Length: 315
Image (cartoon, rainbow, N blue to C red; front, side):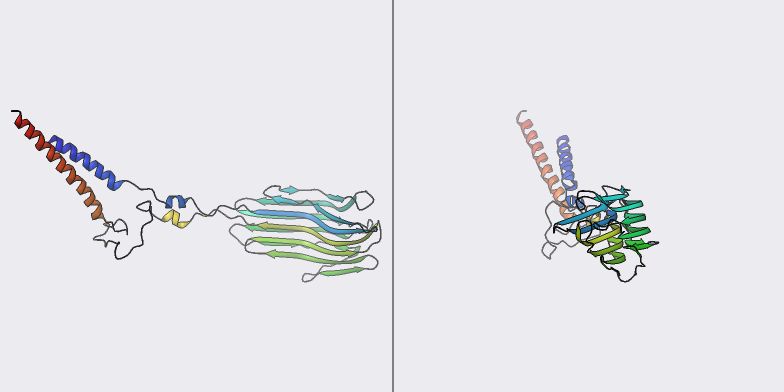
């Protein structure tokens, strides 16, 4: 009987392992999948000039100058007060932007992307007009904010005082302000140009389109755009893990189960009895374990009877 008990115990252990062994699931790999986090972005520039300068000898000189252009998450702060350009005045540098206060700041973290510009007592010049200020302003600012869980916003503050080519100008809120100066050219000034979407925001406190024919300083024509206090931002996006990967229980086998049909879906006999809709049930699992025990028990009985017969022959 000791042999029978030993074999039965071994069979029971094997059977238990067979029934209760956890099976890895393909959904475990899917749990790690999802939408990766996307960092926010922000940019700010105190003043930016994009000009096409035509010299008297018909040579075109593109002029692209920025004062305090900063971007996040890389660069975060800028406070330069002058911007110069070479090549349009016989090799001598020309100061295009000068300010008492000029500061651009951007910030980005996992909750917010923001940008701001502050400009105080600034003068903007163009090639060909060394003694005439294209734009003169006392104070101006712009801000853009893109929170991860809110609506982006963009705001600008009108300049306390603005002059265009030496003339005092009041900018319109709904349409560009046109300034025409004889023997010099024309300037269109647009205030508070803003664009806001569900994930981005951008604003330029002043956007100035110029067409000048100064015929001075070896310059025949100047066309282009000047932007003052420009900001933009894009909200950060948090990482997303699929809900199914978090809440779905593991599958009962590594292979994808066949769709449940009338042929392969077992009808549950009682609460908690069915294991999965693949034709298997709790009764099936128990029957498999019982079959293992019967085979092991039969083998034990056969071995016992053989030992007894051998013992009888040797008496």
